View 1 (cartoon, helix red, strand yellow):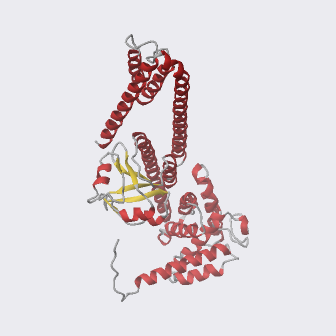
View 2: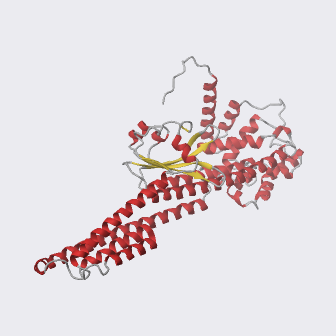
View 3: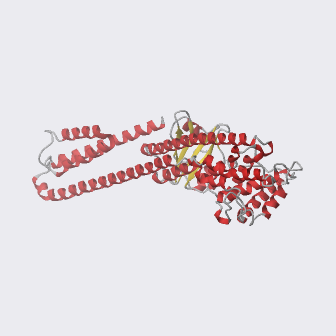
Amino acid sequence: MAASKRRTAKTVSSLIVLAIAMGFITWLVYLQGTTGIAVHFYYLPILWAGFAFGDYGAIIVSLLAALACGPWMPAEPALSPETLAIEQGLWDIVLRLLVFYVVAIFASRLSFALKHRMTEAQTLYQVAHSITSSLRIKQVLDLITDHAMRVMNAKACNIRLLDEDSNELELAAAAGLNNGYWEKGPVILEGNTIDQHVLAGHAEQIYNVRTDPDFQYPEAAREAGLTSVLIVPLETKEKTLGLIRVYSKLPHKFTQREIDLLTTFAHQASVAIENAELYEDIRRNYYETVRTLTRAIEAKDIETYSHSERVTDLVEMIAREVGIPDEQRELLRFGSILHDVGKIGLEATDTATDKQPDEASQVFYRMHPLIGQSILAPVTFLQSVLPAVTHHHERWDGSGFPEQLKGDAIPYVARIVAIADAYDRLIHPRGSATGSGLTPQAALHEVVAGGGSKFDPKLVTAFRRIMMQDWQEEKSSTQPTTEAPQQLTE
């Protein structure tokens, strides 16, 4: 409704300007006659009509100009011969100057508009390419907000996704302002008529968020230097996912072109979210299949049941601590959960630890990393973490197996899995005479003692740090507090 009213007002304004221009030019032609230079001024409203209303607009204004210069219009100037002799030269100079000036301004504005449209097209292409080349939803949404802000000359932009459980719009990506503004408080739909209207499928804009009663955080907007905002929905065929906003520093009435442009960015964001959700479903199915496989392997020996899942959780903690990127951490989870997949080729009696006295069983046990490698080698997307399966029993001093690698020659992912694997086996040993393993603190002490001989000393230091932090946080959360609860205010 609001967009339709804006389009109608813009059309009426353009028609009024055209009518005034045609009347003024017709008056000039009457004064100079149809043989004078003033008749060329008709090109200006014709060009403008074509730019604003397309081919039909240009044709209609051309016909009106032809009628205005019809038989009723004098061919010779309406000025007296005396006035003509004195002022003809001045008229020609002034009128030519005006024609050239207006044409130059029009050409300049048209050139600027074309360059801006080309920039928009290039930006939309870059965003579309990013969507097709990356399935990392955060990365793509950050790119969209950044480009939308710059192309629309806005001060800031953000994308919020609807959480149907809490009925809140949660921040998914933002650009242009620091986190202080974006974390100002929850954006709740209850009583929020503008956002509700947007989520119903309509574009909305607020001319001044500092004074509009429907804007939720006017004071925060004033402090951040924001004035106007344009909001459009993020929609798919099935549902509305959320919304995208752009903010301007100065009061600004967004045009239909700007609304259409932001709507295009919103469509691209929706496509990115859909792609990411599909990828997440596939990845989750892959992972659940892998978990089922590892559980089937470990079910042969109840004492090692869930060992791979515990190792995977520990590896995730270490990888996050040492700064491994999200994408690599995700693949490392597959490598961790599958690190003992080679045991599927061994009998239950062969899956002994390296304390097993039976030499034949020891030989079979030392084969399981290579068996795991041969099982997973055909899986293309696991190639980067295959070393975690093959080399997680290598030791820093070269005493491990299957290849007796030493120090930095051991793949980094394998060194991480080695620490997590050893720690969990100390707590949950197989075939322990007492039926139980070490306490977490004692197991950590053993791992730390192995730094520089069995394990990478830098990774051991990182592992010790995160375990100590985890225990400290757990201890703090279980201690009762006598402090009075604080009142929270916005």
